[in-house]
Amino acid sequence: MRVWRSLEEVPADLDACVVTIGNFDGVHLGHQLVVRRARAAAERHGVDRVTVVTFDPHPFAVLRPDHAPPVLTGIDERLRLLAAAGADDALVVPFTRELAGWSPEEFTRRILVDALHACAVVVGANFRFGRQAAGDLAFLREAGERHGFETEGVALDGGPQVWSSTYVRQCIAAGDVTGAAEALGRDYAVRGVVISGDRRGRELGYPTANVPVGTGAAPADGVYAGWLRVLDDGPDAGTPHPAAISVGSNPTFAGERERRVEAYVLDRDDLELYGREVEVTFVAHVRGMTRFDGIDDLLVAMANDVENTRRALGL
Image 1 (cartoon, rainbow, N blue to C red):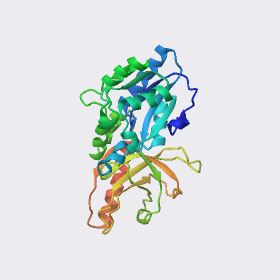
Image 2: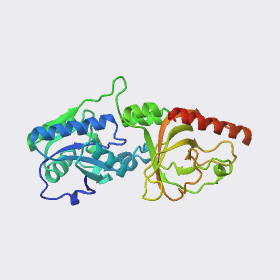
Image 3: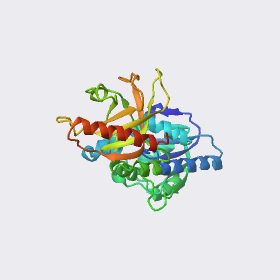
Image 4: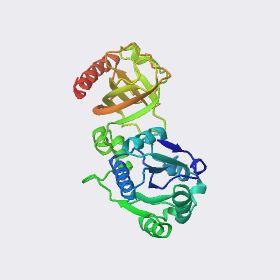
């Protein structure tokens, strides 16, 4: 995939293409449908490329930072998923207050017409853009008649519950990783660099890889069955390892408040993961977070968690 991180990076001699626009956070099944419809439009128009226009950071992070939603996918992972869905190119527009002040007409002319030479634009039916979100599907259709591009709106889909990034976040916040997976078309995962923790898990016989939650969306506090995969080029890279995953702040131990993801790779105590980037994938909810009265009770629960993880993963 060709990626341009600003309008200035887009080649001046770019051939006509089909454009789709959105935040695409999570690249759920609804987003994937929009990209497929853009691909179909490209075939109708006899052009080779589908170009995605997306924004970084999320607009709320700039306009209403106190209300910015947790991120489902970082920009690099978002682009990887969009490429897998069928996009050829991506224009990542840095979202600023200046951009937020553009009128729908200015956005259309500068990005869709002058920069990308769109012959067709495909967006979700509820897409809004421009100053005070004044631009919508009707505006794009009228602008397309003036500027020479076709406009297609893709109806929201997903059955009783439409696919949306908001819905996926709600599922994750409730610990419903199965529901999130149904909307995403894949199991939900978080990525991060493993940090050195208090090593309490190793002392208890369950060494864990600790990944800070940060601004990303992590499931509700509790224990989950899933997988850990190392993303770099070092030892054990690329292989999914079965893991029992704890999300939360360890309420059994006084003074621990930092929320994090801790993944214990089943039957492995030899993995050297500190400082390495990993992906932790959530497959099934095992239990909620519980405060135990002592270490013995905690060890019994952890052993049960491991066995329940094996069952959930079909091992």
